[in-house]
Length: 199
Image 1: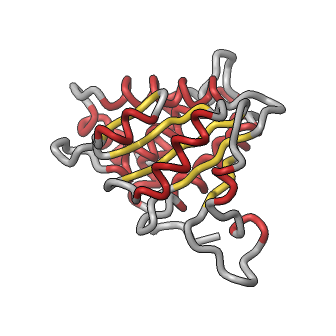
Image 2: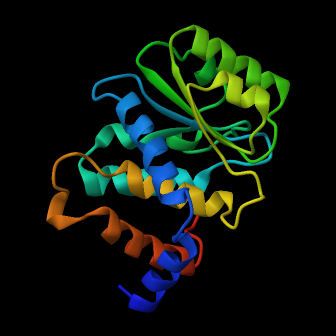
Image 3: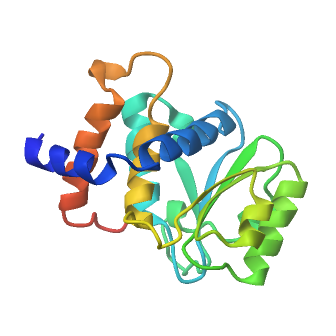
């Protein structure tokens, strides 16, 4: 790992709430997605699909040995011919219930239709978490929230990186000695790399 990148990331995060806040949120995420449960549903807004977070959670799932972290990306628009893993529409949220976790990533207020579906999923027993802009209605629907308001020096993309890195942590020693510091080092590399291709 590039020590300069690691030092830069540490300098940016030093004295902020973000390392602890993202670890807390990731802990809630990790504890809500149980092995052999209904799975992790990941949904954004009509204008923002959390592709990047989906890809990083898949990576963390593999690296940490926690297959339950692999999300199902729920999309607002599914096109004919989309591969199966990209062909899950909003009706999947309507079917969500007990034993399932719904992670909503909303950099702006979601439309009423999505909010209604999330509300129904929560009433059916799904655990709802949100990465959002502090919108009161979104926060009222979620069991656990993490707000990125734009008033901070950290943007939503960086917070998603931190959450995915922390989600792969567990109480037992990580494979090959991975610890949160190692994950932050990898995160520093990811933040300076070109964006990954869409699935």
